[in-house]
Length: 230
Ligand SMILES: [Cu+2]
Image (tube, rainbow, N blue to C red; front, side):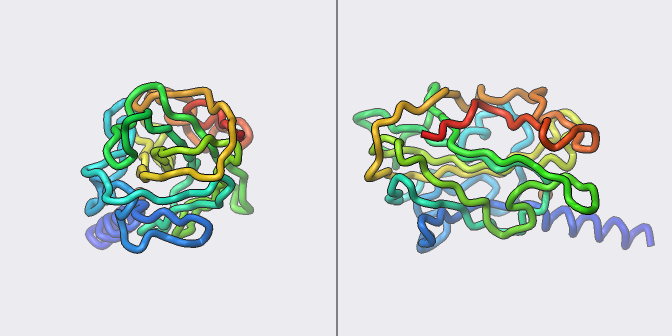
């Protein structure tokens, strides 16, 4: 029975991980996985990033993508997830504008260029478990690209932070991807505050090193800068 128990545990763990290979814009997804979303290093293993200060926290990419998605400002977007997003934790979206003279197809996203456009907060369900919007779905939560976002090429970064083991240092798991996008029909907003990846997160941030059993849902502090809503 002991053997069976550990087999089941291994199976559950393997199923619990995920990648986000397709961006969906106003209901229309990428034709194939990793077309405008940069293929991540965990495309096969599905392992999350555990070191919030590592270079992989930016895009976790193994390669640039071949194309760029057009994203109208004001569009509703989400990502397809390869497995059910069954761990508790927030989903966050960031944008970084490609510097002039460079392309979203090749720019590396370095510098203090990343601003957050969305995060999610937990509630407590009837079993007294903390749950987040989008939990247990096969897609990430929807976000609206702020209409004030200036036109141009950007990297779009999605992350889901799995917090089921986050009471231990460096045991939060970051599932993330970056897509190459071109925002059209946008506005004249001034996005900010800006952050770097790595740099935006520390392993000791209260939203990363956290025991979900010991905090109230409204006191959860998602890591990174404040949301820019346009
Ligand atoms: Cu998992």
